[in-house]
Image (tube, rainbow, N blue to C red; front, side):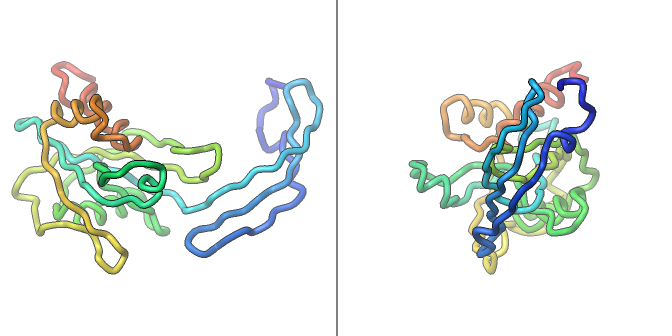
Length: 201
């Protein structure tokens, strides 16, 4: 079975039931999965579809700084995180190209109109239940790119504080648990390895 070319040849969807579309879309699906030994096994899974998104880490090599945001995240709160979350700027694509959307998020959340943005990778963030794929970007910034205070859109419930910290302080915040957001940790380690390390590729 491992030589089979497409996963689609190993899945037979039997029934899809919509559970909720109040905010995003939650479905439960009954399907057959063809196992590695060739046998078909019935399985049930729930999937939460909130669309795909993009995340961005602006960086200043000369000053060794990065721009982050701090905001309230209710799902993290109900799972025991009694603090605001420190994150990179991010947002859903809303049917726009990832590069276009992340530029918009930089202006809305950070208050910066960036020049070149560079995509570094894509990743599924919670593939066991959430369909979302994130597009990850980095971009140089300087003070001349600032066009406002940022803070997000109040009408969308955003109440965002902009943080400028050194890459060393940001990595220390990962190490001591002040930063616990996965997309942020991924981009900070990418920046340390590929942007702030002399001679990095």
